[in-house]
Every structure is written in C-alpha cells, then in structure tokens.
Length: 272
Image 1: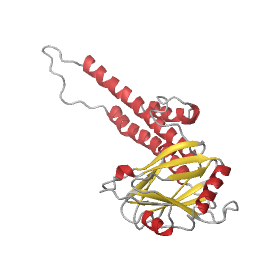
Image 2 (image 1 turned 180 degrees about the horizontal axis):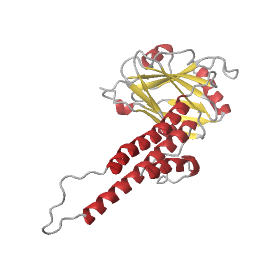
Image 3 (image 1 turned 120 degrees about the horizontal axis):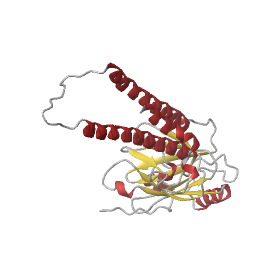
Image 4 (image 1 turned 90 degrees about the horizontal axis):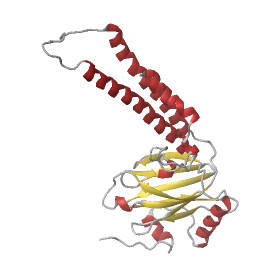
C-alpha cells in the first residue's frame, strides 16, 4: 500500500498539468496560466493518485475479507486474535504515506512562496468592501514614469493588467475585513488580512483574459468582488499604464472611495 501511494506521487515526475488540455486529466482544474499553477496542479494530481491507490487497496481488502470470512453455519470465530507483523505494518505504512505527501507538499510550498528580491512588476492590491483597487508601482518604468492606479466598485468590475513572462509581486492590503485574492487560472490564492500586508509573487505564462475574485466570504456583496485579469505583452501592458496616466489616474490611492476624490474616472453607484 505504501509503495502504491508513493509510486502514485512519484509518477508525477513524468506527468504535468501543463502537458494536457484535457480537463479530466487535470482533475477538473483550469488550464494553468502561471509558473505556480504547474507546481500546485502537480501536487493536487499527485494527492489524488495517492488517495486512489490507497482507496482501491483498502476497499479491495474489505471486499475480500467480507467474502472470504463471511458467516458460516454453526461456526463461532475466535473473538481475540493478534498478528504482530500485520499491526506493525499498519503502524509504519501510514507514516510512510504521510511522510511522502508531506515531502512533496513542502517542496511545492517552498517553490510557491519563493520571493525574488527584485521583481519586474510591483502592484499594491487593496481589497475593500466590495471591490478592488490596483496601484501599479510604475514610477521606475521608463515607458511610464509614474505610479498609476485603477479601482472598481460594487457595480463596476475593475481590470488588472499583467505582462506575460514577467515576475509580478502583489502586496495585499485590506482596510476593513478579511478578503482573499484569487485568480483560479494561477491556482494559488492568498488571504488579505486587515493590519497585515501579505506578499505574493507569480509569473504569468499564458496570454489571455482570466477571472479573478475574492475567495473569502466578506459580507453583503462578496459575490460582486470580481475582477478581470488581462495577461498581455509588455508593449500592451505599458500602453495600458499610459492610458491610466492620460486619464489622470496617477499616484496611489487607498481604495475606491479615495479614488473618487483623486479623479473623475470612477463614478460610484451605491447599491441599496
């Protein structure tokens, strides 16, 4: 059983979520669109392989025992029976399985949490009731020269632009309650906790438009905390930031309400 579970996880070395466009083979996961997604997806699939191997063996043994030792007429089975080698195996094998899964989890976690000292792009993300504000720290970008921002509202879904193939750092902040920053195609997510700035780095690997959302139940309009992620070329990314400069959305704002006071681009409508 330990060998089956261990081999199930080790099989992952020759299999990757990025090698297939088949949703069934990815166990229902979306196509990966970041470097972290590949590592997380492989761990997820490996855990399913290990669970299936153990499950099939255990269910098979249960079925065999039921059939092999079913009740017979006029036969009272022994009420106490010991098998020391079997009991030792039952103790050691779970430790081997858990140890194998723990090892691969730590390896994946270290990769996902790895931070580069000088990422290509820095974005301060504010999750507030009930939308998102994105502050692009682009003052050092020669193509832009200024920090710019974009903010959404309950009724207006904001856009987040990212350059493909570039290391992006998200600095996550909340002024009110706990939110969670999640882009399903990137697989990983991170909570946004008031009073604590969490940091997440990722490298988008696939151009396209992806859904983003809050993954933490945060209040009345939690379901409205959506955003669109545009992974584009570096030229398109710089052009988008320049368009924010042209709209007067420069500097840094602390959220949607602050954005209203800094420019006419955001017209907020309150839901009642």
